[in-house]
Image 1 (cartoon, rainbow, N blue to C red):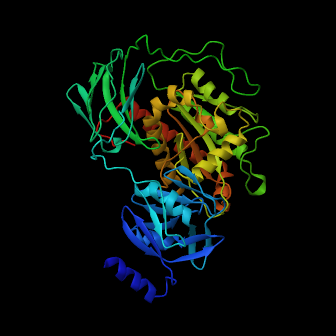
Image 2: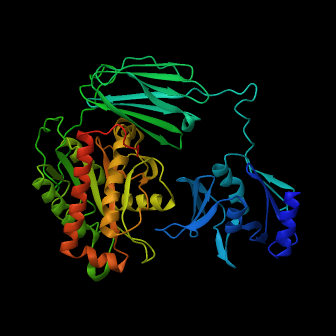
Image 3: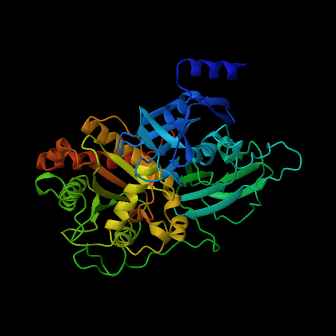
Length: 508
């Protein structure tokens, strides 16, 4: 009855042509107006959002349309046939089109993109064919005979951390809590793979699983733990922080070889400095350089010059605070992207901060974006930005199609992902205050320059050279001093958090 009433109301106000489109979703059945063009059926994005109790808006930076449905963010390109659900790209055969006050989405969007956001089968009825089903609806978790894959358990340890990465379905509902000298993980459904193994001593002393329960026995070196939940695939990262973790023979620490020389890059000794427990070395990467100018602004402004100017001021500020700064370049030269993190690793840096300037098709885009490494981009804008930065660096990444090297990802940055997210949040807070902008939220993307970093690592897009107001500020030496100071304050805040951990602090 409700469906019939909705259809009648829509027909009365003239929104639905004679043949309405019926869409059957996990959230219920809705009736949408449709039009036919280019041999396919099209529906209005704003009406779709309203019918599914979602929202339809625009991305603040890229100006691309965004649908928010069931807590999932769908970003839609109006230039290429592609959309993304929570950063996971999905190819389409038709480019969504704007007209008559609507963004028109092709029928394939309904059957290939919506199921990813709504968590189940979507079926189109009345679009010129009897019905167009999406992938078959999965059986309920409680269905008889259903087989559930085991939740995988991966372990990585270092002198000051132990990281447990769990991979499998349903981890978003898993409970994690500390019970005395144990951190316990309880699954809402399913069970863990066999996880009894040698882990060393100090922070984590034993790891064991039984059914849907995983227990991490804590040692005398344990100080705190943090968690991070990730998608694509679904993962739960548990990072135990502390000191004096001994590494078992089966899990040898990664030794960083001396990086090859790069003319004009920061010079390094033949032997790496000794790693200490102190938080005292910051690697600063001025983006671009040499023939790679980066983004261009008015009056001949070049990104490579601005990043070096700010990085130099930033390094000076850090030195005044008693910290050592290592720059990946000190002049206008080309330094390959992967060489930059190699320099940071070789110098045993505690943080890696890559400084860049942003650019967008619209002059209205403004503010700061801070990124940390991920195999999947937060959204289409983040993905395109990473592609642009990776291509500009002239790197010969070992990963296919400019993606991340999975071996380097697994051995290095995943053990620092929680800290990288926290560092990114801290930097973003400082710049929101400096530029007077609303928080856009920290983002993730597959930046090659962050690949393989063996410390918390972020990339900061300070401001937009494509925005006349921000470009004018960036050209001013006094404003560059403010930017350097904002970065310094973020590092000092992060240093305080590192040295005096607050176990009640929210997980980034």
